Image (cartoon, rainbow, N blue to C red; front, side, top):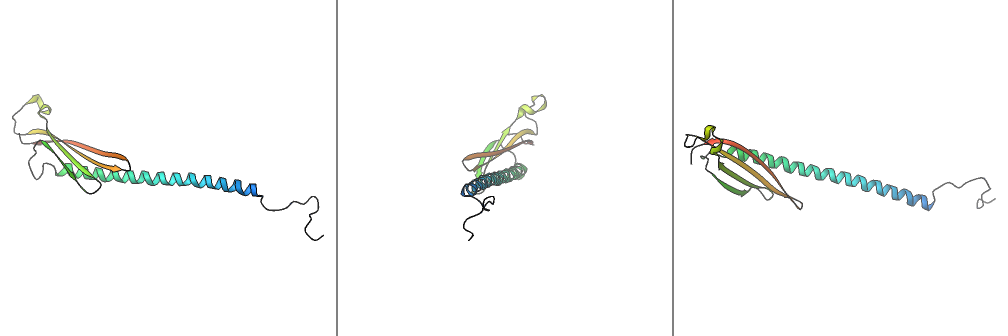
Length: 137
């Protein structure tokens, strides 16, 4: 025999076209699942980093508010960089004084710092607040 015709009982080795297509489809599905898991992880890391930066900016603003200048009720807004905006709110809170005393040497002020930014199509924000004593208005 010249090798063209196989004797009965022997099978050919190799893959059929259907087996190759099925293997390729399974590999494609697995790779797309791995890609989605990876991109979700990268996105979550980016969001966590943005929140971490915003918290640091808010803590810094809380620390410096009322240190160089006396506390005065009001609000201020500014842009820290192209990404983050800072909103500082200072409110006089005489209701927090024991017995509701007004006209004392020190009055409680509520200081709230809100950092906002855009992440994709979502507006995100972090807000921190504290109470600090300051001079009467």
